[in-house]
Length: 353
Image (cartoon, rainbow, N blue to C red; front, top):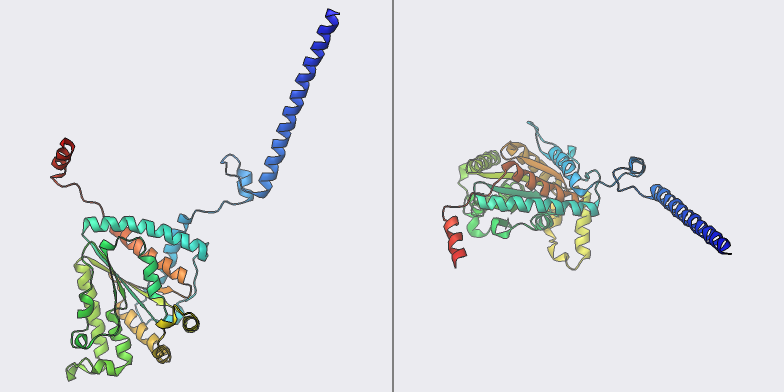
């Protein structure tokens, strides 16, 4: 009986082994089925599974789109040496691979990089940057400034918005008002409208020019050519002083301006921005286009370039302007200055307290 009991125990042991093997095989088979199912429905995150990765491409990180933003920005730079035709520049371009939502994430990434560069610009105090924004009415200047300047240290930022000049300012030279708001070295300055208004709105409204009480010999058709020469010389002078000038025309279509005016009228928080005089200015659209074309063509130079930014989609315009600011700072490559002579002694005194 002892032998029979031992034999039975042996059979039970073998049965247990076989059962465990079957369970293990079942588990392995189940894992294999799950893996096959996963490979059919989502990309693999493992580098050793190339077939799965090829089946469903992984989404590129937002940072990859910086180069695409730079390429589109480069196409916006005015390089013609002759007359400019704004009609040849699109107003509704998009950045490949981005939509409004992903564009907001790309903007946030660009602003983080810009904030780091700006901190070094402030510390080095060798260069300054002036960003000039111009557009037709409802072109998006205010919102662009709000978004692009987000995250920038306000201690190194100057934003100036130029409305209609006062009576006293009418008696000053046309560059004085904006000169008082220029950034110093170590700062970023942003102009919401600028001295260019003196060859735009003033050109289309003779009563504004008459109110400046200029000497009669200056009041002839050559005054606009002369003012453009003065602006070009002014920007060349700023460049010599270490203030880099970058100029942006937020380019919207006439249809898009109409849609934005209508949205303003429908929104209680926006209707205050609408002025019935805006419709009178809208009637002068073609004349404003001509004035802008001549002003941009006459002052687009390497040291103070113009960028005609497509602005029918506000998120595109904001990202491109932020990219312009970032690339400008990257080209300067500002650096933190080395520690001063007294830093070592100061540390020793603090540690000894």
